[in-house]
Amino acid sequence: MSIIEIENLAKSYRVYQKKEGLLAAVTGLFNREYKNIEAVSGVNLTVEQGEFVAFLGPNGAGKTTTLKLLSGVINPTSGTCRVMGHIPWKRENAYRRRFALVMGQKNQLWWDLPAQESFRLHQHIYAIDANQFQKTLDELAELLQISKLLKQPVRELSLGERMKMELTAALLHSPDVLFLDEPTIGLDVVAQHNIQKFLKHYQEERKITILLTSHYMKDVAALCKRVVIIAQGAIQYDGSLDGIIDKFSGSKIISLQINDHFSSQEFERYGEVINSTPPKIKIKVERNKVAAVLADMLDKHAIDDVVVEDLPLEEVIARVFSEVSEPKPR
Image (cartoon, rainbow, N blue to C red; front, side, top):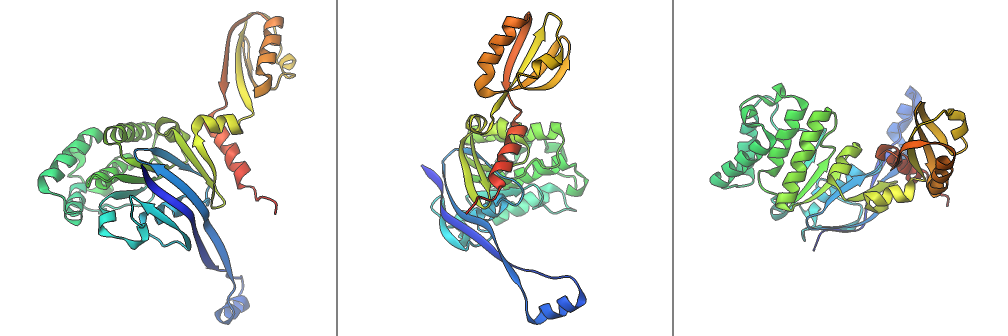
């Protein structure tokens, strides 16, 4: 069953173009110049119930704008959208009680108060039954290991601890849809892993629908089977993570451990030598030449070990962003 249905969704902004200098500033008071910016342009997307979807794109691609449209924070310029049958920008209470939005760079908790005070406020806002509220809070606190931090002012918490509190606040009313905008931004490796582990467990247990934006590819690899890439305000790719690698990565990495004398120069004819520290060498080779290259290498050298792997996901995604961000000729 489709939870999110988007058709030709668009959002544009009229931005004042201020010129430098006093004369230009005075002239601008009477004769202003504006530029029309299309943040989202004709997005079409369907998300099924229980999916965990990565929503990726370079900076300024339209990711956050799309999440704000889906959350009803802003109104679209054109197009239609339904989330669980609701039109988000109508801001119906029935819809507000069924979704949550967490933005890694925005705080929803009172800075100088303990998190539990903000949680109590959420209980009243969402009219959560007292027993159900306490049961949910206890469960989330145990999963996120924050029970001892609930009475501590939010400003005294680490960034990772604050994000755990933000997730707790977002999930207290047990939403059916969760929008996550950069939830691990700025976190260290341990904090990122803890957030990933929690989100994976919670989504599998509750079967909620999650739409995630992140610049950390480890988030995507750990959590999402489906990836949607947006650039220039439009969807450029919608499919599996493996499909991205197959479509956009033209190379593979061959790592060898060689049991005889060799020089890195003789391997340059196969591809790009990434690292050469005898007895090991690592080479980037075109995907369609891997079999032939391996056969030739095995024929010429005594090889103890060989590993063939895809390029690092970060490198592939960077290439994807570069390609889809280039203006298309008209």
